[in-house]
Image (tube, rainbow, N blue to C red):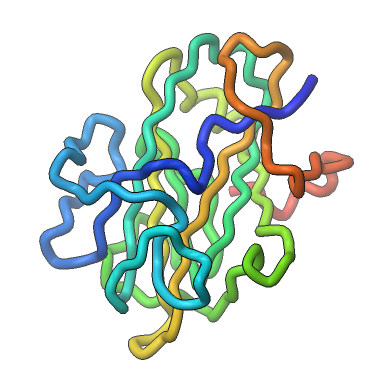
Length: 199
């Protein structure tokens, strides 16, 4: 078994800043994001760790499409998320990871529960979220898949916001031909490590 990366933070994403014009179906795989902006991740402002700079605000939404040739070759998934201050992640419209956010699908104008500083720009590894295996296996499709991320600030005058997501697969072969994860990625040692990340 080895690890591959279907979604790389610094690739091109579709994104929009949170506003009252946000379609409530934006997390869904068949949502038409053609009117959204296009930019490389990370997306945010402040700290100098974002390739795409947005105006100071409450939230930013990101979407990335990736294609899986053989879903049975994928054994597990880990989201490595560098963020400031809270986020929710969705695979094909279903929540797979969250931190510093309230339960349920949240509107664009909700503040994060707590402050959280991005870590990569400080030379540290981003936070790791093991995705519940049964849930993940039920969501991953042969063909087109969509990872959707919403990242929220903790207060109105926050000096920074960052959304820098990496989706990493544990695979039994290389049928899907995704690139290797970043050099800082370390596979979790034991399944005990995963318990606190279960939804």
